[in-house]
Length: 456
Image 1 (cartoon, one colour):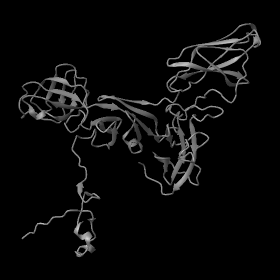
Image 2 (cartoon, rainbow, N blue to C red):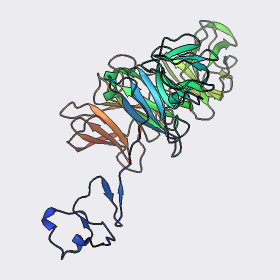
Image 3 (cartoon, one colour):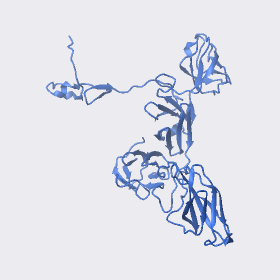
Image 4 (cartoon, rainbow, N blue to C red):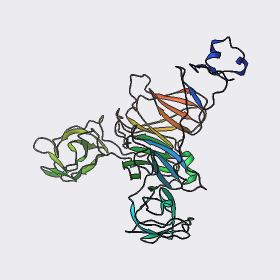
């Protein structure tokens, strides 16, 4: 008869068949002949792997979808289902169609009746806004309980009615009242089914950056359970340039003086792009008794403005003011020039293929024209790719891997250094010391191996 045994530990895991007869070994007493789909813990216990639950069918069973995690916190989690030019949202238990998570729904509409017929006809109390092909969720119906907590496809839609595609309600119970119908929340995207394999993502709080070499980089932003937006990223300073500039000399003459003015954000210290103005050939020479007063309209969130004087087509810093500045012939400091607009991602062939955040900057990499090039935003200004002349430490960065082979960058990982994975090698991007900060003048790329990776 079977003899019960106490196995206090599985710490040895699955042992080799060659040891099945070695009862004299200590490992034998805490080993397993077979350990399939279990995790053995160092302290001796074992647990099964995480399981799955059926949530619903894909948008189109004939076209491949891709699931992407979206996690704001440990209690606010989603799974995003990307399909052909569509995205749907699956809740991690924060209000989906089931208690343990399900597809996020739009606002429900009250049902006025359901007929017993082939492709049963559903009427609603108010206009529903559904279109043919939409997927909807019905619940709370009295009488015809067969439709509750089920998903259906809409056909034959009118303003207040639609048919349940492929559903024969003839033999079901008769609808006796109540119930609601809600469309599965769906967001339009530019990504075709063929794009999904190369779609890369990186998330920070409620914003996920999506990159693909065939599309402009976009930010997917969540502002509510059913409020998601997908918009192309505008690479420009978030601080607006001053407007309404005027340069007024105190004495008339035939000289022309040129000026550039930038706004400095009070919160972030970000400097706007310059706005330009000149006196025209209407000023007396600057000096004792004559000055040029430069004025401009205030910019929201800015109380300081940098003023640059122009000379031979270049502009150098001459001072700072509120909404006015008086130039009495200050010498421009050409070592401090205004920012220059730059957007490296302007069209087909220039879209980045991957992104991450590292060292206070957002990094992008791998375009069709620059498969081994990295671009980093200004420090703490993730949409600002502006540069200066001479270069400032906070300026945007561009670096290209110098290697024997041209292997496209496929993934970026931020650790103590920025790890750059290509199709044929692994590189470390850093400042040369763990205590230093990456700047335009202090960026090194060192090879770490030559294995390469597949697309992640």
